[in-house]
Image (tube, rainbow, N blue to C red; front, top):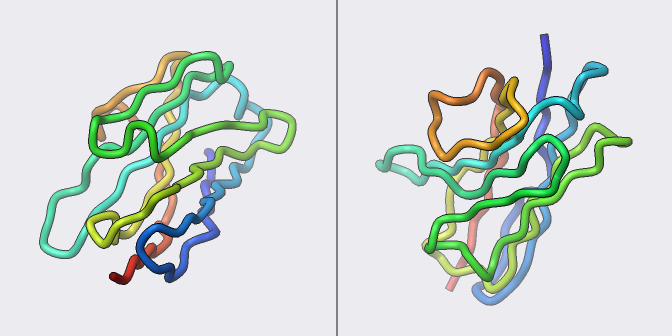
Length: 124
C-alpha cells in the first residue's frame, strides 16, 4: 500500500507562486506514474499534470500549460508541482495521485492511490 502526503499549499496573491510537494511511502515509487488533480468548490475534480515513472514524460491541460511544472525526485520518493503566475481561478484543493504504470494518465480512474489534498487559495 502506498501512502501519499501533500504539503506546500497556502494562500498567495494573484501572480504569485507556490510549490506543492507529495511524499510517497514505500520502495516502489520509481515504478509509479504520478499526477496532480484539483477540485474547486462546487466543481468536479480536474486534471492538472502528470509525469511518467521515469520523469521523462509530462503532460498538462491548456489551463495550466506554461505556468505549472510537474517534476519528481525518485531518490526522495517525492513529486512536485511548481505553480507560477497563479490566478484566483487556480483556487482549489490539490490532490496528488499515484498510478501503478510507467505512463501517466489524465483520468482520475487511472490512478490507484490518492493523497488527502492541500488547499491553495489565490486572492486577487
